Length: 599
Ligand code: NDP
Image (cartoon, rainbow, N blue to C red; front, side, top):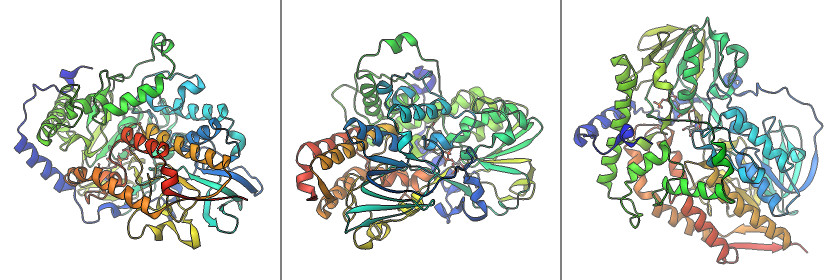
């Protein structure tokens, strides 16, 4: 990693001027409607989320008694399944809305889609299935194929109900089972339930006037329409050769697909509200010799090393040595092996200023038109938005057929029958690509589209009406035999599979233990939930102010500070893993769980 090119300490910055500039830029973006500015893909916008990748398959409704129902066949569901298998629990099934495994990697197929965390860390269970990704950052297609590989390896296809949407989930006291119903009139009666849904799965669209009026073609990046654009995930979008295309949004998704749109569209307009920070990618093919030399247990070790690096835990060696670890080691300012605590706030802030300044200088070096270069510069602290990595994105703005339309923090103002309008100026286009991201919800209904009813018909929304309550983000009082992955109050990590596995391993261990001991019900106590709230508060405090001062995004609920990031445990995933493991090993179940037994 070229530290100097990415922002060494030689860069001079004026902290007061930068603080002022960051505040001004942030204020331009604050708006009274905050997170309610967006539209979901519902009603006359529902076509934005139809499964365009598979034809509907007919089947008769099923009525099934089963040990465990797993809702979701993405990474969480696949990890939960493999963890159950490894512990000898065979009696489970998976319900999945899509037509295959993969979750986000099933739905997202846009050109340029790739893992933005190193694939040797990101792609789960590599050692178990004997696979090594072909590149340091694998393509979306390769990751989707890996999900299919996991499905085959763990014999999951015969247990999967695809194209099946859960419509209701309710606890039945008499039988001590979860009754799960679906849009196909299926009924599953499960002893245990694992809700394995993802966090960012509901496409959102800008709530601007006219969005339904547009007569050209439009789609959201999460349902890329190759029938219209031609080509496939590696590009070759020949259908756009004679098309004027608009893309709205410049987040992590847009950064990956814009180079392909730029290469193929007759004219591309990129509508930007807030620029992303673009760091060096430096993708490369896997060195086969290196891959052959990896010792047993390498993946877990590498994942832990990466996760530690990005959580501020000192490591002798930076195994991944990429843009992520560079950002965090610069910002966390590792000084000496025994100083594994964050350095004081000012030092962190200075490091961040310098890092972002280096980022802005890189733009000047790459983008030829000075006005465009200026508009592409991000003015906020690095972690206010997801940092992006690309060696093609900025370069795309040097193309004659690509124009950046900088909305100066305001966003597009209107969509007409044939144009996108900004500040009174209409840009006529044939096609609009919405790269406007995903909504997230706290309640199950928001996040997954169905409500969950626990004891005595109590819904989880009602239970959480006065505030979220869980233990470890996994267990909820009043909801027996119920486990959640990637839910509120669980861990968040840059490398999400690390956090997911921390949860699925524990869940599988508990379920296997319950099966061995003929446990009928397993329910966390309210007291244990209270203790977890204290722990969450301890860890969350220092972050709140940081995100409050950030430019708006889904991280901070568009500037209102209670956002996506506030939902999670902020001790870091390495710490979370230890906390949960210690809980399990040191009598946590005996202390915090009420159990009843089958006769
Ligand atoms: P984001 O929410 O990050 O970005 C949405 C974009 O749309 C932003 O640039 C936003 O601007 C813009 N936008 C919203 N409304 C308007 C409007 N009215 N006018 C103009 N622009 C508008 O969504 P993404 O899909 O890019 O990314 C979501 C998440 O998905 C990422 O944070 C990341 O976690 C994940 N991801 C991961 C990848 C991986 O490789 N692992 C790749 C891609 C995504 P503004 O910034 O001003 O709000």
